[in-house]
Image (cartoon, rainbow, N blue to C red; front, side):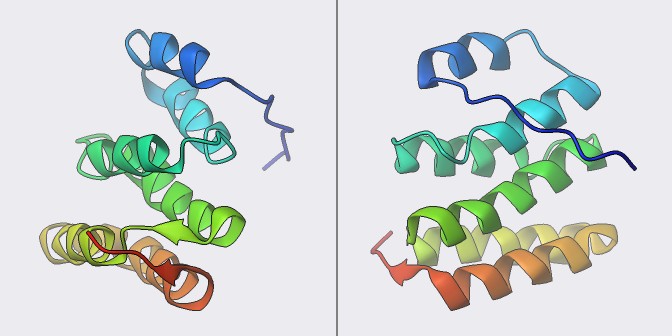
Length: 114
């Protein structure tokens, strides 16, 4: 595995790329959006992708939620935790990723209402 520095991206660039990006490129795109200032948009984008049929895309979105909690300390905790628990129940293969994200959320995110 090679560490790859992810470029900074604007919300507008991300919105355009999300419409036409798939597979590994989508994973990298999802991992690059957590620093966008509109944390609610980022959160909702990740929530959209955590149930993606491509397990790598879903995994990137789950990881992104953990990054978002660590970087911004903003999340709608109830909403996000409910979604993650549903993913863990329906897709046991992602349980480890979900557990890591939940730990990050519980440790770093102040509780926002959902």
